[in-house]
Image 1 (cartoon, rainbow, N blue to C red):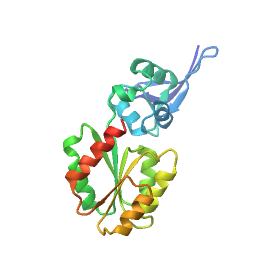
Image 2: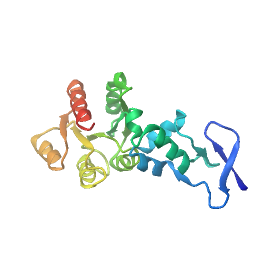
Image 3: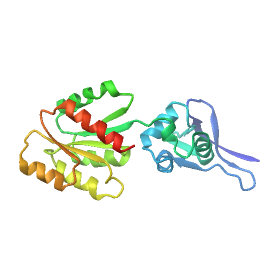
Length: 215
């Protein structure tokens, strides 16, 4: 039996572990947190959370990246079922997209009482929103229309025209409401339209309805 050691460390442990183990045909195979997320049907941030909580073993590379062995993931799935997210009660992820930091803080504060059910993230422009949507796989996007570079309508179109993100619920908001903007929002397949200042009670009710539908 031969061990090839590397500076990988097991998560929360200072001891070095084998990077590869060869014995006949046996060999450890490492996968990324992104691939593990795809296998489990959850966001990469959820995989990271399970690792932080100690539910899923992972190795840390010298560069700080986490790697999971196929065997550890297989054991995790066997222990927690084919859909571990249901057992761990995965929180609904909300992405707020707005170039006004005050509006972001207002919406973040509105969901603080429900922090056990929702994880809230923010993006300050359309391009950052597209990146975070791919990374986080949010369930709901609260999307301002007027933003630099890429406006909310274009972001909404990209979400709804992508087979991988089309089921995300999109709530369009604007400080300059009129019938034309509302019509265009729904033509982009937005799921709801709100004007600023936002009626937070009504928005929370809408999100609760979307959350039930998405179960």
